[in-house]
Amino acid sequence: MRTNLLLAASLLFASSAGAAEHEGKAYIAEHGYDGPRTCETCHEGTARKFLDTVHWKHASKVSNVEGVDPRQEWGMKNRIYTFCNGNDLVNNLKEIPANEKGKTKLIGCNSCHPGNHLSDVGSTGPEAEQAIDCLVCHSSKYDYSKRRPYKTANGQVAMGQDRSAEAAMAVGKPAVKNCMTCHEGAGGGPLVKRGFAFDAEHDAHAAKGMVCVDCHKAKDHRVPTGFDPNTWANDGVRLSCADCHPGKPHKDQAYDAHLGRIACQTCHVPGAGGAVAKDFTRWTKLETGFYEPSTIVRAPSEAMPVYAWFNGTVVNQPHFIGPKGSRTDPRSKIFPFKIYEGKAYYDRKSGQLLAMDFAPPTATGNTLAGVASAARTMGLKDVQPVPGWQTIYFANSHLVTRQKALTCDKCHVPSGGRLDFQALGYSKAEIEKRRLMSASLWFDRLLEKELKKDE
Image 1 (spheres, rainbow, N blue to C red):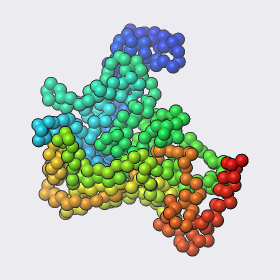
Image 2 (image 1 turned 60 degrees about the vertical axis):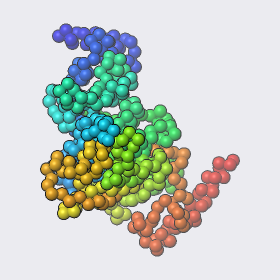
Image 3 (image 1 turned 135 degrees about the vertical axis):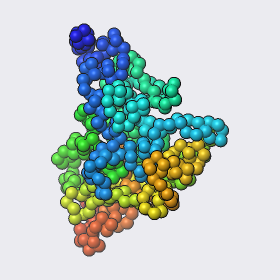
Image 4 (image 1 turned 180 degrees about the vertical axis):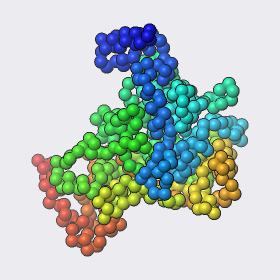
């Protein structure tokens, strides 16, 4: 009862102080911050609900990927593909063996898990609820230097958190930094995985002062996402450009006429970035004495996308993960994709991709030791590793531009155009009849626009 009275007083104080202030600020100032327990003074039941989200579980049931049991949960927790070549099961936060310089470090693919790792990915119950790091997403004054792995007194590897009153007093809607601290750094370093820099230089939404959650509006911490051949786990809520730009968003009827079969991203995300290839069978030695997968990376918007029909379902094969769709499928639209190729080890007998425990190769460069360690963890016996390549199509939905969006003359030209119409299912006769590769299709319209610019 006393707590409720204090809470009511703090809410009254906050409302009189100004609507911009977080309503629990006065309560935190008086009582300090005790993790989710403090947050639940107002947001009762939120922690328990959060444990059922992808951000905590790193997995979900998946219904749009071929060859995947829809009754099972899939995601970073247990999936294997050649961008990560491992998962949380084999690359949990751990201390790696010492390298030739006698140095060791704590690493793990799930270091972005918003908990302390003592209650790990997928864990449930009261302890897991109190392990959630609410402030890493919600505080504008979070001290990220405190969010580093460390060893506890009994030798467990844990992740530190900033649970200071100062950080707690600065809670609110997640800012770009809160999201991008993990999402920009995924895959081995800044801008490596997708290469999308969410800033005014590279994205029209950022230039308008928008933040990630202005589009990815969560409800009960379930974050809506688009369809992506590369990303499977989801919270069951989806996002599209039409959510904010419905109907006919262009002033040009010819552009609006494309909306039925051309995705917004095709014209408004003309560039790609991030890693275009990795070789997990050959690791590069760093000055520190540690090793990392050999990787070729492109700057944001430096790479050109590839275009394909996509209906939201995914082709899932050992050597190829990509969009499913066709011109004859009314659900399909042409989307842009970043092509990624990864080299890793496959099992000679089954033909399936093998996971890799990164601890051995990070310390010594011995990639086969990493495969053997992962096989033991996953209960696989008598595997026969052989190198092989896998191609993955990444959805290309960020780096949005308005000023540099593709115009007619970027696709409908005799050669060198963005779209390969024959590969997309158009016959030579149809291409000629519809003038799909001719300036005659658009010359008069673009000339009129150019002349208006000069007036």
